Structures are given as C-alpha cells and as structure tokens.
Image (cartoon, rainbow, N blue to C red; front, top):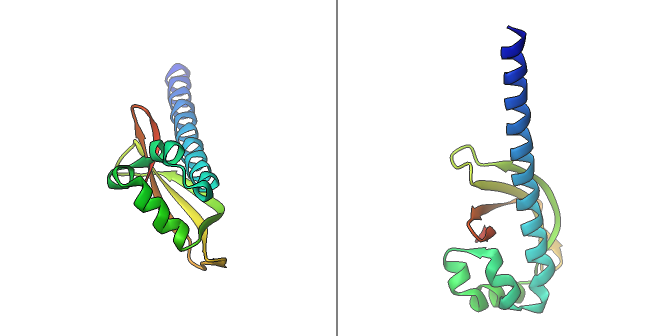
Length: 119
C-alpha cells in the first residue's frame, strides 16, 4: 500500500509540474507579445500568434496598436480543461490608456514550434 501511495504522489507531482510549466510558458508568451507590440514588428510578433492572426499579422498588429492596447498585468493562467495543449490567461488590458475593469481571457496554445497567442 505505501508503494501505491508513493506512485500516486509522484504522478500528482509530475502533473502539477507539467501544468506549472505550461501556465508559465503561456504567461511569458502573453507578456512577450505585448512588450513587442509597440514596435509593430511581425518578424517578432508573427511567431507568437496562432491561426488567422498569424496570417494577417500586420493588420492584426496595426489594429491593436491603433486602439492603444497594452498589457497592464497577467492575473492568472490555467490549463484549459478541454484541451491540455491550451492555457487560458486572464489579463488586465488597457485600451488607449484606460484600464478595462473586466479582465480579458486570452487563449495560448502549444504548437510544435512554441506557444502562440490566439486572438
């Protein structure tokens, strides 16, 4: 019985560690994206985007910049219960200097070439 408890404990620790790495990678992706946004450089921003936003990087970046979107703070991050390769990041965002009261939920996905923000 003690051996089974040890194995379960180790599995729980590994799962926790894996989840922690995912949430930290997602947080970092969101922070890097918003830090790089003012430069509007799609060579840097494009690889951080998933889906259509990556295909239309310059238009996406121009739109976000035009409206003055900026990251105030990352509040938390949780692995999406429906997809273990996605993390939902809850962030406080400002638009044209006005901090939104309600946090924005950002989906960050794990891809073979890294973590990407889906806008």
